[in-house]
Length: 619
Image (tube, rainbow, N blue to C red; front, side):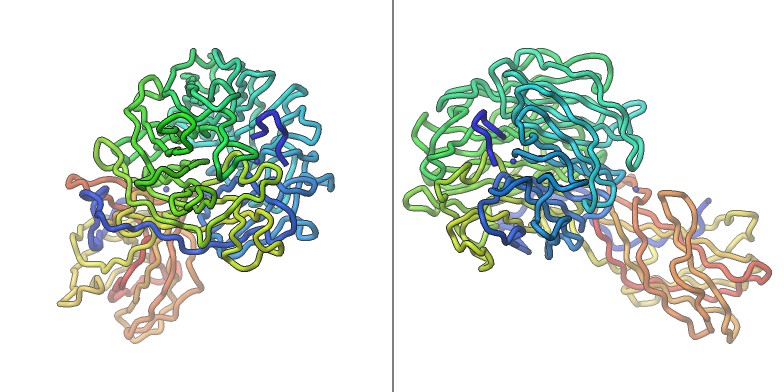
């Protein structure tokens, strides 16, 4: 955010095979900490200061990440990862920046980067231009390799843009994208419907948000039904106290405007509140919003608000607070303190993200609890699952390798940090001077754009689990396209690591299996499996194994044809989502994949058996 002082921010069935079960949102969380940082990286490794970071993950591929930050040179620092943050490359490796005046990289930027990635694969990048009079939004349809200008808003006096996108049930808007910013002292917003990769409709008319004159430092979130909610802080000056105002646009992209503001909370952290860790730039309450967009979450549609408060005004004992609303911001819960320390030190610049596949809430922030002088900040994190009426946060865990002390230059840590949460991992991105990774060319004198890959462990009910299939139930049915009635007998003997189905001779040219798995994953994205296929004859028989592609409802070959004999041949493969999924009568999450086994079109398929071995489910 600019803060006026400009900153450099998922046929009928034949067989079901059940896998070992995990229930959805199981009992109370353990008191044992589960949060763990797995891959802290210095993403920038360049001279000068890089701060005010933003990060997003591709909902279609959790291993694809894109990161932006302010930089002390022209433009914005930009990096991308294709392996979940283990390694980082650059769209422009010559200078590691975009929006710096080079062709096909967007208008030259001043600052304040923000980004969001939708389920079609569109990546939106928004920032303030170099003249500080326009909000620029770029679009990338190739995971941040190339960019085109999607929209430019202004000219006007502008500050603090935020871009967000989300799936919605609103007619004509399977995805909505919104940008909010401060213009001429009030909060304004524009939104557009998205119907495919690279297919973004025109942005609607500018909406000036009622009651926000004199407020700024906003954030915005989109509800599953398309309702849009923004939060801003008022006043924008001084060291507090102040209030956080929330406005909702109930019809989203419809003709209606945002409603009048609701005071969600007061705060003793002002718009320019100086603390020892950031006594040159100052901090604000840095309010952030996030909706629970997981349809299977018990709190589907809940809105979360994170912000900073100060126990006693001007005590520098700042805390991170969490509130929630079950009516899209009209009423709010009592605050829940996020940081669990017993010190009087500063916590600041919080960021919140909710995993749309589970409803889990992750929060990260800068934390000085271990600093005797209240000046050295570390990155801390926690999370909560949506079980229970009230969020129960896991114990705080440090997810940075070192402590950062400001160099008192420019915007210091900045006005915000970045956080994204997809596929069982959340990724914070922050300004760091600790040189904990040992590859800051400036040592500890300049800020680098740091990131980590964080897991909630077993308590999060996410990530990848290995399941041993067992014959839970098997049913008779007819196959598609007039195939024969298939009689099946399950024989898994004493083995619990596999599920074997014995087939009689069949005159059908194919046999189709619907395989169901029970899992703790609320949104499985990939199922890795192996299946050993055998035939009645001594063979070999040419058999092709196909797995249903749920995005197109067609069967596609998973590999070249297998030359199968009565001794069998094993195929190892992965089915990728989205998967059909549902909660059964016992409250257990189930996912489905369909597998078809076929031979030459003129030859009956003399299958003998297929036996499924262990599977791993990622979500």
